[in-house]
Length: 357
Length: 211
Image 1 (cartoon, chains in turn purple, green):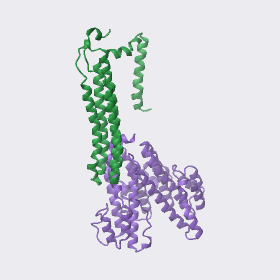
Image 2 (cartoon, one colour; image 1 turned 180 degrees about the vertical axis):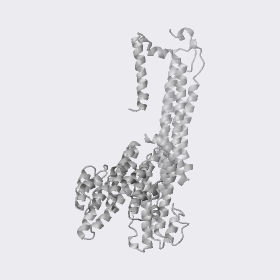
Image 3 (spheres, chains in turn blue, red; image 1 turned 90 degrees about the horizontal axis):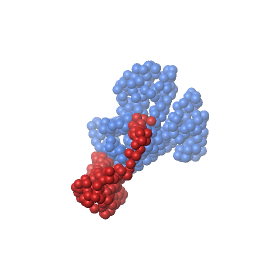
Image 4 (tube, chains in turn orange, yellow; image 1 turned 135 degrees about the horizontal axis):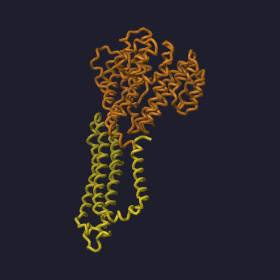
């Protein structure tokens, strides 16, 4: 039944976003990019793809940060085009996508202010998809209460900050706790919102958001080993959605080392493979804990790409918009990686990116 | 329970119950007489309603299918302009559904002839009236659902074609099967009025309404 009325408001935009998706770089593109000798070659190769002449006005020598910034700008332009052409409920859905970036920007500004960095420099480092009007006012942060009353209460992030108003002072640990609490509230809110807009969107987005929640749970657990974060505090940061909720979350809240994390993940068939090779590599003595974490991060990215690709197999749902943004971000990370390898002449690791199509 | 449920289900049910109880308690329960309703309603009403539903529902189905397909063709055509010409065939399949409705409307309306009131109510005229109504309803619904089917399939065909040109012909086969549904409706509609004569005046003794 979703196919009968979806095309009234969203048919054109769905066609547009699928067009964007067909322009993402494929294996053959990556192969030709990896063979470039210099960043100028890289730029020429990219101009033959959907990126076009996005680097045309940049003075040489190119830097990889410029490439990353310009590529992100193409994503932002595409997103803004879709956002400005959309109506409810798609416009609200797209707004939800931006809230994640807003949270990152807010935390970046607060942290930067505490370490006394220049306001202007901080504002330039914010992600463009998460910009909101009153952002510069965040740079006068002293404590969360004041921040909330003066700035955040008018932004869409207000309901997410309510739970962490009690954080006493802003130091590095507390800011991470604030970030994770706010993101947890955001993920749960997004999950509930997606359930209201239709069964096909809910099917697709529930899978993606559940994985996101589990990924954050596992990351918080692993990162909190050997820190001052108590187990109760840790448990409060886990989102109440996902395959690991509630038994996995309870077990992870009590975990002390990575083996216990692995045991918890064994219970979920999709996550069993995340820790597989890392166990065997550890016996060889090659990777330490850091290597296991890096491999895990890689596996998480692969799983995320896999789930986002699946979203395109369903028509008449909003998940394609979310998945396109995430896949494009992964692509930008990939081309930045390749550009870095070329610039630093580290060609042995140039193929360490995650291919999408 | 929101306002929508209350007004769309609650209010009509309430009114029906009030009217029924009123009739029952004021000793005029006999006023609810289905047989008398069927005998007294003019066959012209049935016939005209049937023709109206036939063309109306067919056009609804065709229009619905066209906007479903058209939106996707326009969206996909931004990046892949080559799909716009080939995918017009999906629009044509949807349009054909409306043409079926028009054909049946023309065939049915040839049965409508003026007959004076006093000579209208013959057995054959009743038959023609009912046949036109239910034939029109059949054709209309078949075409409505056919139009929807071709529309959704056409929308997917456009997006699949934009992604990979070899897929178009395969999805087109699905659409062809979908469009045959309208043809089935046309055939059955023709069969239903096969034995119906046009409206003819009967002899006065037979055709007056019983009071």
